[in-house]
Length: 434
Image (tube, rainbow, N blue to C red; front, side, top):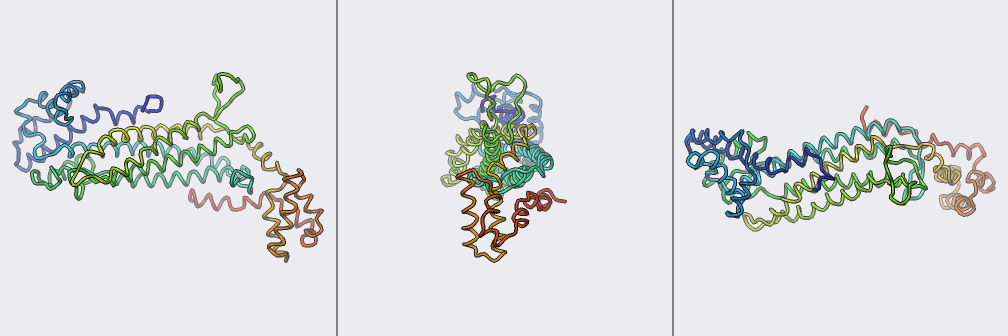
């Protein structure tokens, strides 16, 4: 990803320096295990560790690869240049390139997941803080973009919190899914390398041995991982869309923080645009772009092919770097979001009590009017509000069929906003505990 949408911590996971460092650690730990089994001389295994603090020359590896056309061989050649050809002659003993490449990819995905979990934690904390801050801040709920019934801004934040909490659980599971390594040799039979080498390498690198690999680690694991990233991205967009709606001029119930000196438009000085949440909508699309290729990577020919390789070289860094950036951007938006409770009440009352229609409908049925009859009476008066700008309560009080079933006091009671918030504490207890 371009630097504009990247954070250094995540970028570092995918850098050539990091990749070669992991390759080296896999090879060195494998040599230790081989030496312990008596397959290679102990002094050769110890010699490999002499390169531990020597920086690998990325340019030199690229130069060798330009000739060999093979990245792992280029790396092993450079390693031999550092520790000596004789000392390096047992490096990669019985292994195949995928042992190194797949195990490395999974280590990088695990590390990326750890950073993404930190980003999710920041989002969760921001959503929880704002939920309790606005637990009782009344706003109109909408369905189909149309006024429905009253809710609270706190419930909106709590809903997003619960969704992101589920995403956190999904990511923990996805991290576990890819936290495997394979050092099983060509076609995964361990014919030329003892399974105990794999066990040792995985233990040293914080992985579980892949129960059965071919020449590659099964790609259903990676498909699940990237699908999870796609779900998280969609949840980010879900929050972003809500904020974008709230910032519309005609709504203005909340808006992104507009910093001193910030400009909204090169042409119109009055503009304050929801640029961050619009950006998050776009970034979410990019993360989801990785999902289908990851699913298609599951089906490989026989014990292996490399149709997955070019895909993963791109979607691994791009999806995790983009999502990492998006999570922290979203957290910042929520932390600084400017909320306008007065505008929320103004919008709620725009149609003069119309949003209380269901309470009146239910009261009429309780008073003995048929369901169809109750609906007809309420809708008849509601349409006057839509079409003529009338006051809903006033129309109900003037309707003899309505007042024949409900007293003025009963009608008045149906317009109590507190009725719609009486279970907020129950919902909060379900979401946040306590």
